[in-house]
Image (cartoon, rainbow, N blue to C red):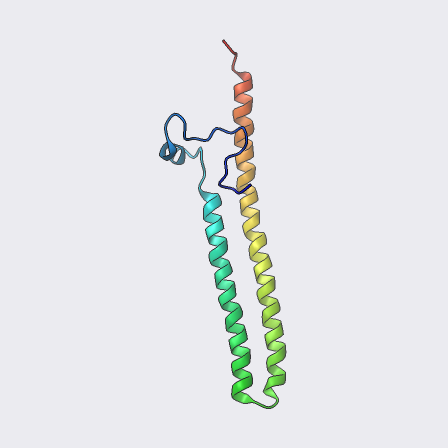
Amino acid sequence: MSASEPIKGARSGYGRRGGLWSLLTFERLITGPVIHLIYWAGLGVIVIAAFSVIGAAIGVAWREGGWAVLLAVPVLVGGVLMVLGGGLLWRAFCEFYVAIFRIGDDLAALRRAAERAETPKA
């Protein structure tokens, strides 16, 4: 289930007053989809960094020749490992924020369920 999907048993916010009202009163949060967009943008920056590291290592090896090829290989491997580590950290960072907002959605659903249970049925 993605952060933008409604929680089972939760009110959708589109009922009585409409979608705009649910956004203005914070009944429905848009942070989940925004975090997904930020994740993909950050991942794009990390991919650009990976191509930069590869290009720099190949460029140094090409320009200097000889023994510089031996220096370019560790730079290439280290750069690729740093980019992979950065990608994993970026993923963990974004997942943390998605989890925090899902906890907020779950608490709101529990509160609404408790309010429905407290109201006497006429």
